[in-house]
Image (cartoon, rainbow, N blue to C red; front, side):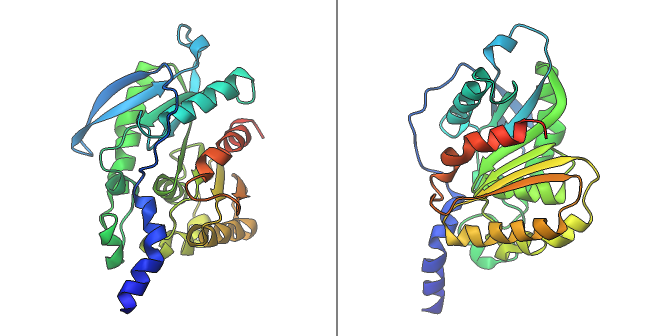
Length: 270
């Protein structure tokens, strides 16, 4: 009976392992290609959006990478948002690279010692392999196909937000900026959140930006609020960060509700 109560309490949390909400966003003009990955032992579909005025010139642009980047996932609405922000000069031009899912739960979750987690996401460290795919296989392919600068970042929410926060804390040198909405920090008994102060002590000297947000979902906001407290007292000098507390938003609405201000704050020089 005790276990049943626990599972019922945790059910809203575990929904973050899946991503089933559908929207009818217009599909923007974009490139798509496949990339065979040795790290993932499979072929992945990559979607790329470029500002139209930069498609035929040699101007190098920064890149923002996105898990959940399939055409049936978050790629259309983020590409359309970036297009509008670039057009009205709210942000500088940037390339969006969406990584289409095959097994989202495997790729975006790190290792977990909690047996109950296995009911919803694999306990193995799939995030480690997914990071290796991005850094050693996808980065070179994008740099080969497009005119890019060295500046790059990553954006995502929920379980993708967990992957982004984990990457920020464990391997901050990979990206120049990180954007995470409602990260699923409950994973592995919220070990990532609990160990944030220790991760910050050994941080890279590279200048890094972090923008993250928490919704009104108590099983998420308690951990994002704690990370804000850690950063207020222990943030390295080279980390520029902003926390957006959104108690009136739901886990299912926070990505779309905060994407514009996240991109504007992150992509403008400070």
